[in-house]
Image (tube, rainbow, N blue to C red; front, side):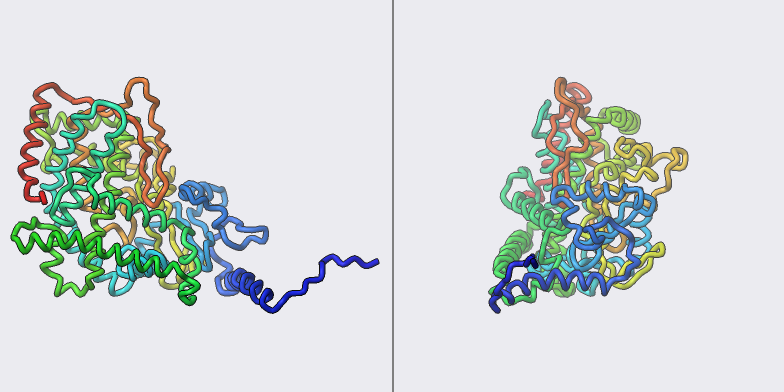
Length: 536
């Protein structure tokens, strides 16, 4: 007797249409993947029993850099340093080797300086006016030129006085922290105040002030929205072309874009008002207002450019300074060596200055090691995209591929950094070949600021701000774990686009007696007087 293995289904036309609508996109996606892309892509992990498909199920939403690094450590990918994953209809090349990152993004920057299509943060949230998300085009080049004119290495020196004054204020804050939690707020205030002064010609004495918190929240939201595979709209941009009654999110994002523009322009307007009154301190925003007619930018671009310095600088700078404190609390020998160098060069009767920098090679190496050891932009910042077909190491990289450089893995490559989790500034003072390491392919010795034409335009300003704060803290204080407290976990870091160390207790001990305390008090008052020009 025959057995009917499938029950008879009486499908109505409407139900059949619905099923077709649901099943057609995955089927077309699979067919598109199989037929349009070369079979000679860099090998990657199997996404399904058949070997192809979507890898998003393999990548956790929390701290994806750890899983991506783990995949890169597999025997079949480790020697190559890169592999392919799929989070949509175009491949993503995940890079975990310093050499591969430099070969593609630095040496072939003419092919790898664009961005994937960002429907959410690029088109909906910023109207394709934000430098971070712009593809490589004339608008991007114009905005980059504007940033470069204000933040290039020679101009970065103009901001040194602000950074040094704020470093003295930072030491006064640290003087009043004996031990325990909560010390991070001083570093966050320092980062916020220096960046706000550069961007808007004003300073911050309390990081909890409303507009600073608004910026921090905005950057956190961008970070969460910018993780690989996070946005379905970025994965399948065709959804953006659907009628608006099927895409109600468009109205929400339009409102968000308008609100964001009003916020950034409200900060810029405070500068404009002080310019009318003749009380505006020099700043990036003031400079843009004075040159606005010749810049060739819209008002929305203006707001995003001025806000971009503020938004990008606060979180990254404070995160790097927190990593510095973590390194000092867990690697006291490095702290002692830096303090010995400072005592020999600077002495005890003053604080370090910019004139001391060339005579403090260990302290310069210590900053490089901070940026290498625990990078804030763990996934290499915003991904790059290729603008033409390419062949690398015998494998095809098609036009439109996403290039994701996993900085967490790159900075921990033992071929370049033996014992990578050991905080060891000497790496930057020795010939790497003496320790069996390979010379790093980028001049800086790390990739904390990115690669190629997309390298962070504010890196010179950021480096100077970090260096002056670090040498001030090291010269005046010793940082250690409080007695009875557990040693901080050097792997306990937050999730998100930018990652920083989870809170941990620190004991702060003044290096010196009453004379040192008087020195800090005097320098704090001198700094406060100089900073009055930046008070609103």
